[in-house]
Length: 159
Ligand code: 4NP
Image 1 (tube, rainbow, N blue to C red):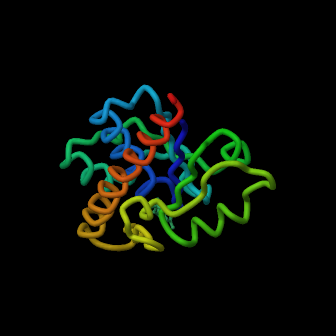
Image 2: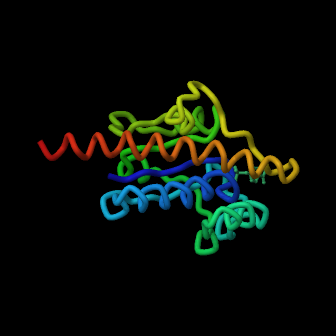
């Protein structure tokens, strides 16, 4: 199973989602069954590390984002990943626009997995520190929901 988190710049929200979701997978004993990555719709920050404010907020919760490196969404991602999960409605619209015909992947909003139907992870880039904490709160809730969803799918594959 392969999961791709998508935001605008791939330096704040989607790397945070990648780090948090990896930890939730480890806690559930599923890290070896699921491949995780993140990317941005835009190319402005390609090659950069996560925003220091995102990295610091994640570190306070015991999550290390220092190895991550921003990249842009590519056409192959629609073939490679089973889930392409957008942080907000703009990212989702971009994914739907770029999605090739016949693509089998699940494309949706990440926060749907937290039970927040139609809700976005607010972009913290131009705001204060509180925004980065809010990203973590939302992403943690959605990561738990996504782990449950994937655990059920993997269980179904065994029977
Ligand atoms: P992200 O945040 O999409 O969560 O990585 C942003 C990072 C950079 C910009 C916008 C959002 N920017 O405009 O450069």
